[in-house]
Length: 411
Image 1 (cartoon, rainbow, N blue to C red):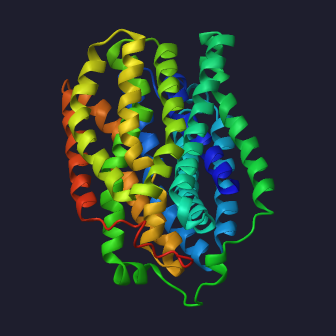
Image 2 (cartoon, rainbow, N blue to C red; image 1 turned 90 degrees about the vertical axis):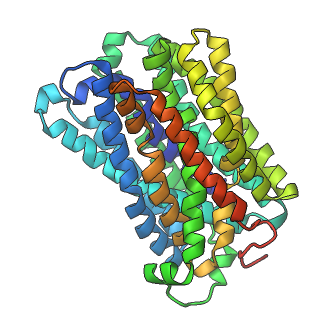
């Protein structure tokens, strides 16, 4: 739970950028139409993703050499600095080009932090949980990621109700970034008393390098990238970009789009431990295959139907259904990656390949979607998501079931 709490706070900070971009895109970028401003903010969002592999590499090595706990504490400090930088940064009208530059630098800090946080906390969780219910705790772990996003969306809805649009545009969007910085300090206080994992303490003292990971575990590294690609793109399509899609394509108001997203994400969050627990009984691989088949089949029709609906209930059902399909990946992905690698290189093995795939496919989802929309070919994005999920399905078909073939020391 200590690892998951940090994951929740970091995700609150991370997703606050996506949720409040509808307001601050105008603050940091020159005047233009809404799609152009959102495209600029999505590009900066993607920059953070592309620095996640650097964070994964640095924190993965640090976590494998110094300890999982030490790496998790360092990642929280970086996220705190990035959030406070965004909260305090003046707008384009005040300092000109320096405003988007500071925004980019803050996102780089957050990207490094997020890249290191996921792998080390997922490794910590997997090594602390028992073999019989590790899938369940993987679901809880991912559920706290949803909690962070829901807190961000909930704050977005509350501020939208109690503040005027003018105040939200002027300064209200800064509030979540101040809150995120304060929460990061609270997580540091929580993590300072966490124990190191038995697996790390009992590891061999061989110092593994990045080259050792690539040379000794190339297949596992490629498997992590392949199984991540479709899952992370599916999640960022239906869990993050969908808020902008509903407002910018379907025609819902910002509040309606946020309410639909929050409702779907709440149900999705509750499903994670249940789906993870199911993997403890039937295995990880059947759930991943189910996501691959259903995800490829439903993406085009669901996005197409959402683009034409104006009914809140219909949109909520469609988004919720899509996210429940994605649960076949999200609920088990953390534990699957950890079970593929030995202790000496586990934090790096979980972090680096995942972050590379997450940057290539998750971080660019909004940018690619908005780019297709701006050129008048929005449905090409539907096809793109479908093809990437199909590619991951091929990986799931050859992936060993890690529940039966775990490399975690206690197993």
